[in-house]
Image 1 (cartoon, helix red, strand yellow):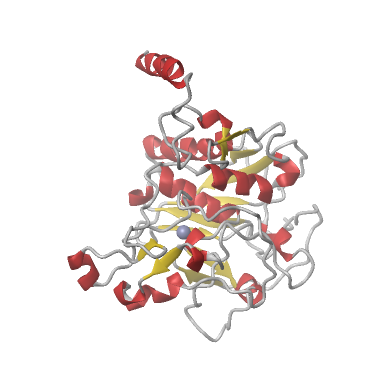
Image 2: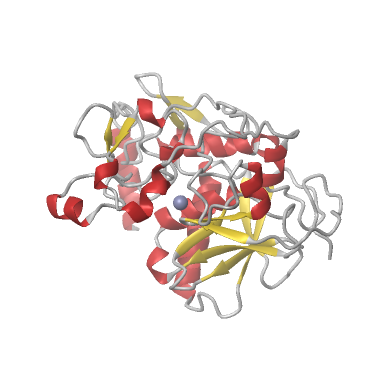
Length: 339
Ligand SMILES: [Zn+2]
């Protein structure tokens, strides 16, 4: 069956690409070349595209090939359908499958339903899908963006080892699959954080590179640097043994000793959701439209409307949780949860 591209046309067969491992990301050789990576350097230097980015400059609309087309079964819908199938034997435990599918559904809820995840294992209506694996040696790993244009394979990997089965990790990896990269690799990250390379295990130094503009034409999504992003690494990632002993973080907020804490919420940040919706604007529309409902914090930042008074701080000033009607609403939410 031919691979179907974003415009729904069968593609000519391509040479089977080699997958290149990059931390928890897999890039095809074609993606790496597009990213301006010297293919003689193996492993590939860490040159992630962050969630800040939505465009290549080299070639017209190259980034479009990274985006899921929504018509991998030939059907047109008002929302983006992302098909997945369980690799035979993977995640046999029904509990594991439930955690994974419910985590996907959290993303759907965050974007108001404009992106939906379809278990295609039984029906097998789609000719390209995400292949859910559970290899404990591989760990938590996903391909970067849609690979249907690059690969003659009918599926792309999303590996969730058993230690990856929490909604934070599952959604992090799924956002990679949808086209997101790490927040701390944004080209402008040095304005917001300090990276303490002397505390980083040399094996992982390259993971703290930023994407530069070489080979890219960055499209600024006008999104603030997002410490709450589910795509941001933890401040205590990749420490040297000395740093572990001394409890020294590898990332701190700019000009301070404050560690860049991993978001304690287990879900997308509001800005993750806004950026995801913008990446798939053809399906999701604009914030304030049918799908993406927005409220404004007292400090002017935006957050998802359905997160008001939900007990988790979205606004830095906590104004999403201190509204006068929160106490009443929270009472009913608590009451409902007890039922
Ligand atoms: Zn990652």
